[in-house]
Image (tube, helix red, strand yellow):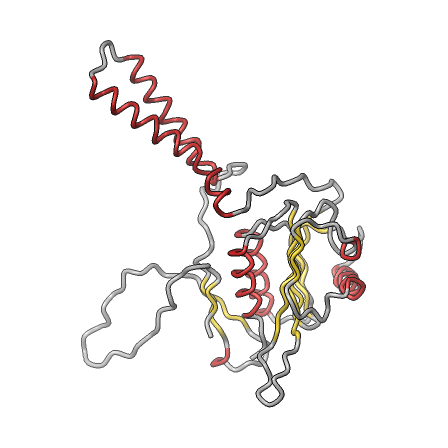
Amino acid sequence: MPLLLARASPPALRHHHHRGLSPPRPTTRPRRLRLRLRGSGSDPPQQQQQVNLSVLRFTLGIPGLDESYLPRWIGLGFGALVLLNHVLSPSPTPAQLRSEVLGLCLAAFSATLPYLGRFLEGAGAAERVPLPEGSRQVFAMSDSLSAAQKEDMAWASYVLLRNTNTTSVLIAIGSQLCIRGYWDPPEKISKYAMIEWFKSQMQEAGIIDLREALYIPIFSDTRLGKILPQGILSVLAQPVLNNPDPTTGEIKAEGFILLASNANYAYSEKDRIWIRTVANKFQCA
């Protein structure tokens, strides 16, 4: 049961054995990075699931540059060039005037494209608020995880932070934890003590045996506030449920994924469906 972390991505390519002397025909599809999710370190290879990581976005790598605003700057730049061309033209023809009006309309559309995209995705329902100075970036995982499991959780937490309006991610599968993003754990504690602190806060919050998704678009629950950093405005807790028992039909909770954002209404319905798909792929086989 392959997992596509992208919300709409083509099915994974299958490898076929070719008979005869002719080599296999080359494909024009781009190669994609893949990783494997394991329920435990002893799972056989045939039970390992591949995850399509084509959801990752490529950036220009310029520090401090938000690539989502590139259409705005491009539109403003070309609009300025159209105006400059009009000023330098001694006697513009009617055809040139029509072309300049069309160019200005396209430049204006390009400049407003980032805001339009945020509005359509629902991520811009409310502006982000700055996180308090006490919050700091954390990236810690349980030491008992195997190398492959650490890789799986690291990639899952990365794509959740990168592709949703999220500032804090907590993945809990059984007794194994992955904490990433901005959190407020006690200062000057070891990684082991930090993991134990998060476990105790999870017990107090009562989200260990979560069976249904919990979405709070306007967060003000003080009971969950101890585990979450200050300045959080939206919370989404997505359970990881195992497959129903074939005899009793009982469904047990394997864990959950806790996401927090510093914006109200941070997760649209499309976001929640995609996050639920990510959580389902941590199910034990």
